[in-house]
Amino acid sequence: MKYAIIILFVAIAITLGTGIYLNQTEIDIKLGGILIGSSLGTGIFVWMPLFLYYRSKGRKLKDYMLTPENIKKMQGKNLD
Image 1 (cartoon, rainbow, N blue to C red):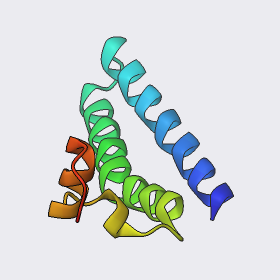
Image 2: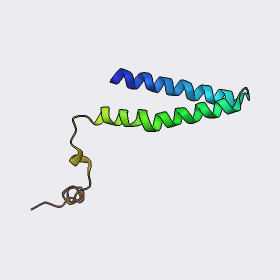
Image 3: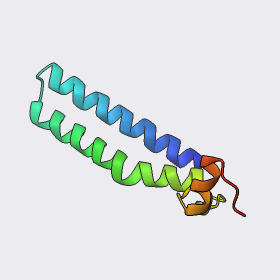
């Protein structure tokens, strides 16, 4: 999973760079826009959820939620 995320990130970065290059040099503005849009969409809707799942695997979600107990802990009040 780790290597798949790294490979996907590199592919997205290369596609984004190619799209920006095509737009800046005005070689093919339409293709550049398509490459930029597809790389951003892939990054947002594919890579980011995979990355978040991989990094949060095995952690308790309750530790990161703002519950009344956690708010009291942050304010320094006892739960008793």
